[in-house]
Image 1: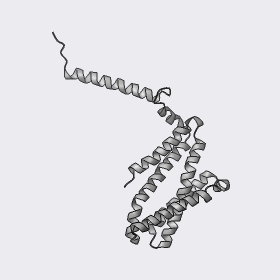
Image 2: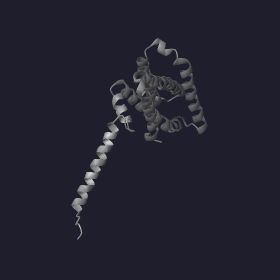
Image 3: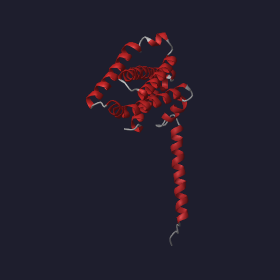
Image 4: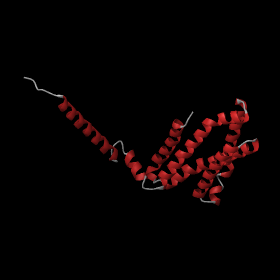
Length: 193
């Protein structure tokens, strides 16, 4: 004498098992003492409104820069007819400008103005640089756009992690900076190549 099992019994057992698995997973994510305490830390981290805002700024600016980098070679080849060698020189110039900004402009600026106002200036410089790249029809405007993107990017890439470390709670600092760098890496994944 066997037990008859029909499809509805299997479905109800399967859905009960799925609910139990989901509930244990959800509880482990919320429980700060479990191995998945990161979700609890992210929830606490979000209590300071400035931290998620700065992370969104990091994601959007890095995504914007990745999109710029992926289309830069096409733009200069089409607009100016540059060879790969000239493109390399141009990227070297931008990298040199980034380095000079980080060496000479970034260290004294926080003493002259607040970091939040400097970040606004950096974002405005990046927006101006994108505009200048769009309208650049000669080398003077194009060179000015390169310097402007180096100033804005150099300031922002230095100030954002600094501001995040100031506003994150000490016990969540590693998580905040890790998520910040993950967002930077993630923007490289989703940007066009």
